Length: 77
Length: 138
Image 1 (spheres, rainbow over the protein chains, first blue to last red):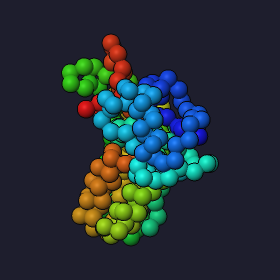
Image 2 (tube, rainbow over the protein chains, first blue to last red):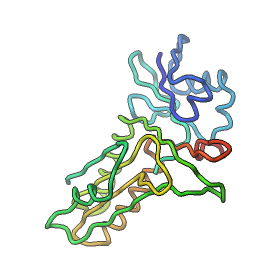
Image 3 (cartoon, rainbow over the protein chains, first blue to last red):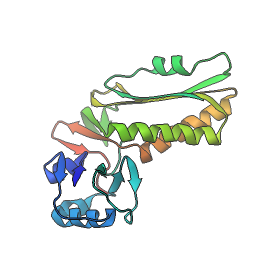
Image 4 (cartoon, each protein chain N blue to C red):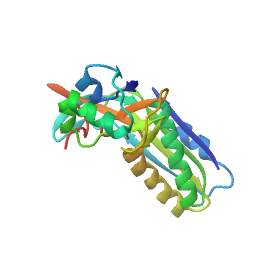
């Protein structure tokens, strides 16, 4: 599964995208996996996940081909 | 309702106003966000804006739809920059046209407040002695 990173998440993971081999069936498990890999994420104010360009709750299943993005705290405007 | 959402390296207030202007409107309200030259007394040299562009445009469209359901607005433009910006430069413009001013004022405030909460855009501030992603940490 390919995951897009933005802003401070790129620096925390030292990458623009992640290719995750581990099967992660839903958003919550992806979030838990990321926190385990990148403990610095715990210091962020809030991290959201977008699936197919829409904010997704932890219970949302992930399917092959989904466009998945990690959304760190926003600061537009 | 006609609307225009755009993310680009350079935007202007005038192009947003030109888009929303029509003979049916009695008022146009604009909000312009610019780069401030200091944060908590530390001089800011520049900002860098990163966007998740396709999703940001979708979220900007959702703001327009929500505003249309709440207020009788006629035309609306939401423009945001990406890339590097220097103090004083324009980074976001919202323009709302309505038959009467109250709807335009309220919809414009709603649009900028919601943009800050929902549109996936991030800014990094550059200081003389470092750089920081704004609002990333509590």
